[in-house]
Length: 128
Image (cartoon, rainbow, N blue to C red; front, top):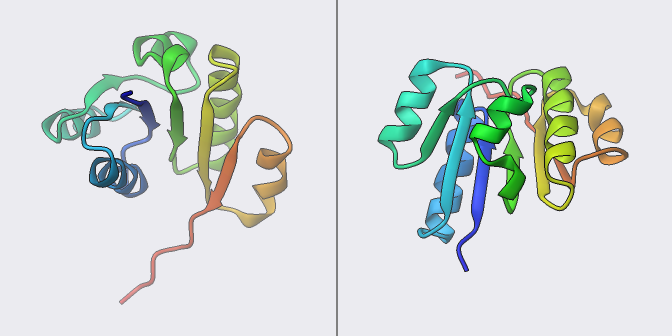
């Protein structure tokens, strides 16, 4: 069986998520949804199906096939947007596994008690 995995947000964390999936499941069907044209172009060049759009927008989620995704990984840089995206994804696909990467630890309980299946806190990158 091939998993359909949707990654919303193709920044550093989204790229790491895609690379991790490809390392363990090279036959996974990967879709990226991002608001940045260059991120969409890069995701396409890296072998993912990519859709230009906002994860808060149900039409963009429909284009990215969120309704049939086995897993959705939300890696946007703003926790409020991540929350709104998570709510919209859950409405589109009540059975999918939603993994969210957030920035602020104090928001963890909000995500766990609502729509996300798994919540991870992204630590700030160390400055060298």
